[in-house]
Length: 157
Length: 400
Image (tube, rainbow over all chains, first blue to last red; front, top):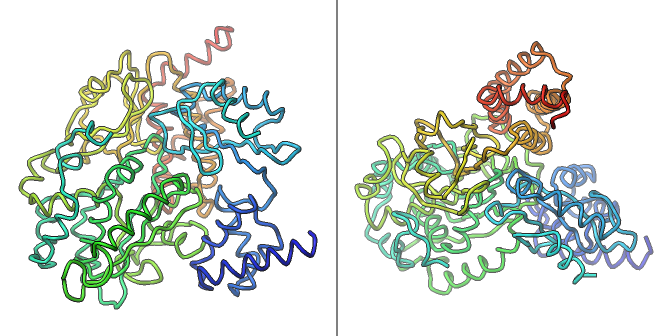
């Protein structure tokens, strides 16, 4: 990591700590913000957060590793999460999975080389009545067909 | 969209703020009495009476208390809370304010699941409007010394955080691992203070009960399960969606309403619920018969129940928090069992042992997740054994 990047990340974390406080209960909020801005929480960011909250970095890592939406490894700019739980599965989520894999040329769980897209499965995202569904970052898309899913992704390219 | 919904209680007409305006004339005891008389039970699935929770938390002596709205609905097939938060935020928040008034809390927290982040903005805006109208803030609607405010806390996707003590752990900035009980959250909850955790739907019933009374509420449902329930219906039917229906409705009646045809099985209560075959479609959806947090997943004749079971078990393997052994290892073993049936390498001795293991998990797991996760395994293998074990023969003969 470049020194400039480190400084700006430190400043960002400092700002977040000012906003949410130094209490342990602020930890998730701080991590969620770093995740939103950078799509992952780097080792350096983890250490900085730990230093501000006066806890061991391993505590921070243990929280990150627990929650599905927090990552310690770099992810793409757009994280596409296709719901794989029963209702979406029954409405043929596999055809959407295959279409996305073909279109982006990667398998589920991977990130494209240009770091633009990460595709992964999600457990039930609460859209069972409009299955199949996927989310891209915070937005949710429902009643998908393979064609519709690809169209949505292409608009982001 | 709101006008299209029909229901006797939650979806019935309600004038925004009317329950809060009535608070001035009520005492805490009045509210507790009404709730107790109404028989309102927790809508998340466990069915614990709300009046008991509120009474215990109200009786606890502490300068700080919390009321938490559990909007971490992660159960596969459940989406009623999403509908309530989008279309009926007034009921959710006013329910919380009434809770604050009753137990003497100044702070309310909504634990919103990470998947629903897109609702955050509109909910925050709604809270801001309530603050402007003095429905939140200091001396609410002229009630002296009644201060209450609500914050929204976003989760980061973990099914287990729907369990109330895991949810509290998560709020405190820890991994969402369930706590030992006792002590119960009503004594030692968030930050060690008395805390009430209620489901979104439970809170939505409260303003209606305050306005229309417990006798009116009791007219609906059965004797042991009063009121109505929101059912999130998905799977093989023509009209999936959220329905408000009285407790005590049979599975068959529900299937007619949502226009499901050729139904083979119904999963009641999501992945952690039980799977009912056709012969049991006369069972009643109520706490005393077929209990549910609202998730109804419908399977038609063409569905392969073993695949369904595999999907459920994969879900539990991923979502088990890993804290206690029965759940962490048990779910993996059950999934392996399902896979061994699938590729025909199982023995009945093994399967029987796994059933025993399932029963052990039900008693030995620390929280509801591991206690309930063997339910689909046990009920699907029992109710669909003819199909499942014939399936293997079918595969060996090259039919599949």
